[in-house]
Image 1 (cartoon, helix red, strand yellow):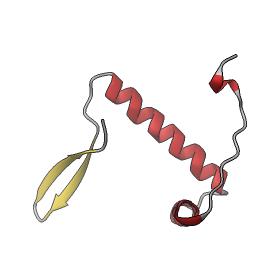
Image 2 (cartoon, helix red, strand yellow):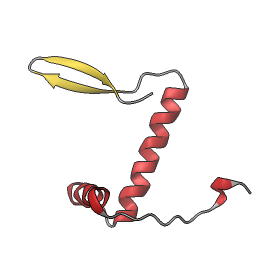
Image 3 (cartoon, rainbow, N blue to C red):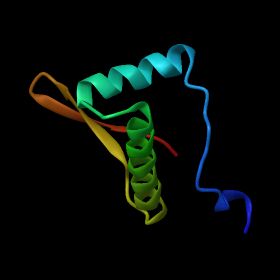
Length: 74
C-alpha cells in the first residue's frame, strides 16, 4: 500500500506548534486541534497543486495604497 496509505497519524503538538494550532483554532473557531491540522493540509495541498500547475502562489501584502505580492514558497 505504500508509505502514505495510513489513514491515522499521531503528531505531538507541544511547544510553539501547539500554541500556534491553539491560536488558529480560537481565531477560526475550529472544533478541535485535529480540525485545524486537517484544514491546514487541505490548504497546503491546494497550494502545491497550484504551484505544480505552473501558477504563482503569493500573498498580497498591503503597504499603504500599494499592494506587494510576496511568494509563499517554492
